[in-house]
Length: 439
Image 1 (cartoon, rainbow, N blue to C red):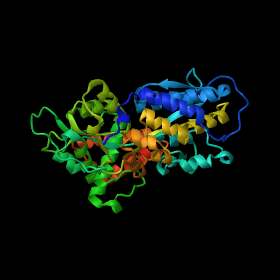
Image 2 (cartoon, rainbow, N blue to C red; image 1 turned 135 degrees about the vertical axis):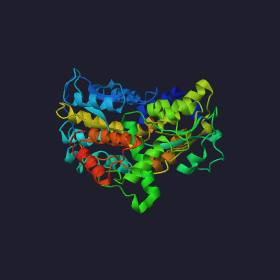
Image 3 (cartoon, helix red, strand yellow; image 1 turned 30 degrees about the vertical axis):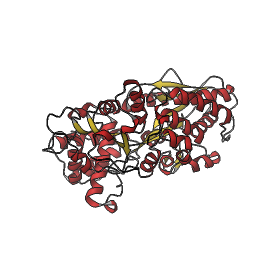
């Protein structure tokens, strides 16, 4: 049974948690003070997903406890690709506002570290206890070449959502991962009004397409060869053209089954997919855990879906690890203060607030055992399990180029031009090394 906590207005949780944290949240001092450089510590960050404002709550709490080291968030808008470009400008000092901390997508850590945009965490002040509290996969995402560059603001992982009322049979409790055959079995009949399709992901031309493609590649590889044959390759994805072809068929729907994948999903991003799920146009969707909060909030306002009608499970195969990591801008005159703030935001108490109020997946292991988290998030064990089985996308300073090459290859295969195995591997290898190829 879904807890009624999930139906309460989020402002109640905000007030309660903020009061508790203001009274009881303490974080060990991990770094020496910088000497009081004037001005706010500036965190450049993409827009928070949703309206709960949990990140700002934490900044307000920090400012209450550290009036001499006040901080503020400098927001930037846009999708993952647009945010990446903006982060690079701030890192280079090309914006009027001078940043101290960047809230980077975890795939950017290798690039920003390799090109000297962010500062390595000093070895003599490594936050050992805090690192020990993090789940393994989020912790690993903070390292590049065995050196620590960041700490998590929040983590993330791909999960599968289903509408319980649209399923042919009730899922077990706790729900197990749906297979792709389960999705295929829920293809609606022709001209069906509700639902119209079995499934939708995010297939617009942005990083979301890369994420969906990589997860499809991993799932197909595991189904074909079993777990032993699906170990991550040096490029992070398989290089067998047959696996890529099968993955493309999964992304866009198999031939002869036109109502499996929503045909409009080629323009979908996360929020669009959530809206389609909310309106019962699809039975299943791939999304991030924050969609659960969005759906519950919408159900309170529009009475279109109840929390009890939402089922969340792991994906059919390994999920992509997502999330944002906080790193100090190289050359910031307040590096020590910035690292102290980052440690505050990555602490278990802060992660707890981010999860309970904002719906973010927590990076700290202990958070998932908290009674208040279990009450507010009935699928907390699912999220933790998905995180533990997740994989990082390829760590390379040239990840944007690598990601674009994946999307290019997907488009070619969809158009019927399947590259040979050697060419496929070479193209991915070149992109991972930052080599542009003439078309």
